[in-house]
Amino acid sequence: MNLNQEQLLLFKTVIETGSFSAAARQLGKVPSAVSMAIANLEIDLDLQLFERIGREPQPTAAALTLYTKTEQLLVEMNQWKQHAQALSRGLESELNIVVVSELIHSCWTDYIVLLEQHFPHLQINIFSAPQEDAQHMLFEGSAQLALMFEREQLESREQFVELKQESLVAVAAKSHALSQPAQVSYEQILNSRQIVVASRDSKIKPELLFSKHYWRTDNHHSAYRLIKQGLGWGILPVDMLHEHPHIQQQLQILDLYDFTPKFDYFVDLVWNRETRLGKAAHFLINHIRNQRKHPV
Image (cartoon, rainbow, N blue to C red; front, side, top):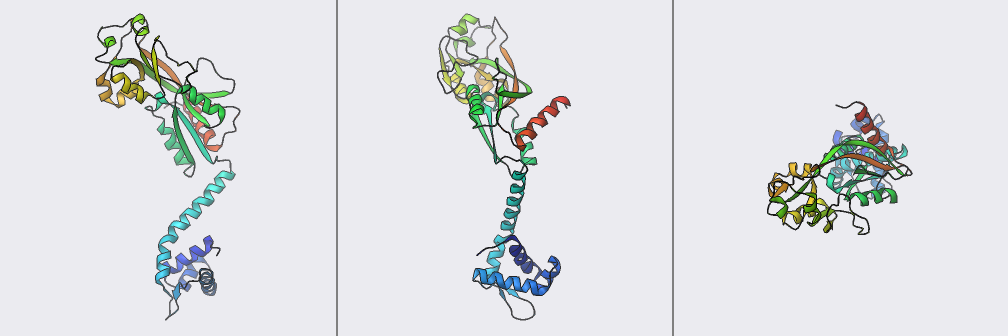
């Protein structure tokens, strides 16, 4: 049994118009061709679809049951063809994007909405990872794009376009010893345990590490929970505090004597220049470049 889109459309049209002749007119065919096509379909299915009694064919119970599934099947077949055409024009089969843990609370989803609007059939996969792990995912090929903080040293393989600025702040639980004085010295934070978001690879030294003693976790949600319990101080995104006022109420932003307590970083969209990117990835890169040329 080899069903095709034309047979399904013809069957659907006969049901909806109520006759072979009306279906023929709508589809630009002669009635005998429609009648023959339906007869062949019945042979292929080994199933009677219409009772040929009276002037017009009457759909059987089986035909009415199949009709309820026909519309969705035609939609899926059209989507399949459109997706195949998009793939032939350079659309990637899927697009993997990794977002650095501290940026989960930023407005990165706006870019995913934009991709979905322009490439509705694209499979998009989103991952979250610490900065070092996100960079590793790019270079090993498990992600094509990454939203990352600026790096002190650029890898020769990476290329990027700057998105915006994000801020992080030093925080501790309100009951923590560091939250009691009006200002905190560098020596005090140096000697207090830090909860740091870092790579899962313990051999990689964490960024933004200030303390002699530290615990590490791979995401800022775990970091927040540890900090909230008074187990150490840490550095969290300002956007996280703004998005969740209860977090801001539980934590104290530390005022540091010796340097600015707010860390401002540029956020980049990064890709591996040695990886061949597809149509959607190029679209997003060019969109961000155009935004930089013509800011709103």
